[in-house]
Image 1 (cartoon, rainbow, N blue to C red):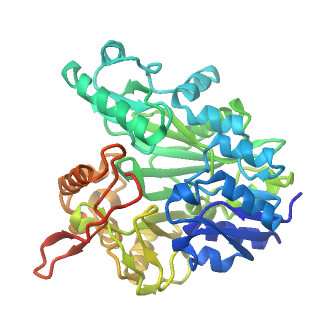
Image 2 (cartoon, one colour; image 1 turned 120 degrees about the vertical axis):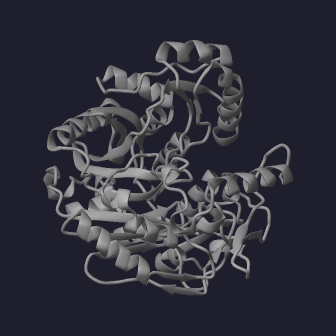
Length: 496
């Protein structure tokens, strides 16, 4: 047992975890960098410790400083949230070596599922359907041979990570040499591991994931989430449940997700992700942490997933006896980012000078900002998540549209106009979705051609350090004559 938790994270997920800890009667310790000293998670926690400068490497990614903060405050457990060190097996082992409880799965499970090729091998052994693919590839020539075996087009993917980094679609042999070189360089830069592998490219699948929870006695599925609307493999809108699958497919996917988790000795909260097309589903990956989109599952099941994590870490049984909950109604989550759709979704920076959050039945705001918050270049652009729950999908869409109209964030550009446009778009309302939705619907909410962002990012790389390319574009503002101007150029200490 432990009675105090250090939250090794920031932003909205740190606030979320702190609130769950308070409901469990646990003390809380926030950590903060210099630019976060007055952030909401710092003000909400019982204690707070400065851990370094603005750069993540000097603060939220510093294992030594995080462990020192836990020791200084007498915290008995560490919750990593998502991002930063949440799926770092070395961090989990360091926490345990320091005599603390890691609120997450065993390090071995993180390690296996974090390596895409090892995960594929383990899943095949457990009878989990995977997309036909290859082992790590040594050269572009080997990649061509594997692609001919699998069948073009193929998708090159980084073996050691995700999030779209190192990922390239290759349609024929002529494209392979260039794509293989780009994929390996990006994988090395993002994950320190240049290995890539190939798998069959699916045309227009849906991205559907299953939430699982495991304690010492059982592994339980908590239903599925629809996560098909994404840009560059980053999710923008999530829903629960998915209205695109029937009860039979839902049951088979849930059974496979439980089998996948048990195959790696999983414990705690995790998500098994699948691509679904033509009545078939294939294992994509397992996220060994709490997901950004967990609120939609909470709203349709009535289960607090973060409190469940805390209970499992304390050796307590799952709330509700671990029985799979039945979904009630429909929930939608919109990720609100500090990005400008009119400038190709470039990051926007500045001070939050106005914040009005909608309220009412079935409306939830999970935020990491307040009036006066500075949105800078150092961390992810996520400001918060607007989540609604209603009796069915159509009612949830109407409620989300109303909630988006009531959300006011001044001082930076946000994705709110884009989300509003999606709520009115015919294919979205008809539930005609795939992971290609964003590319197939350009211009929503005044969004510029994605090529604008590509040009800006290419310019940024040219202006960045040769050894470690970084984004230089720090923000965007619309020009006074209504055009799209790129301004406020500044070095950003983060990679895209």
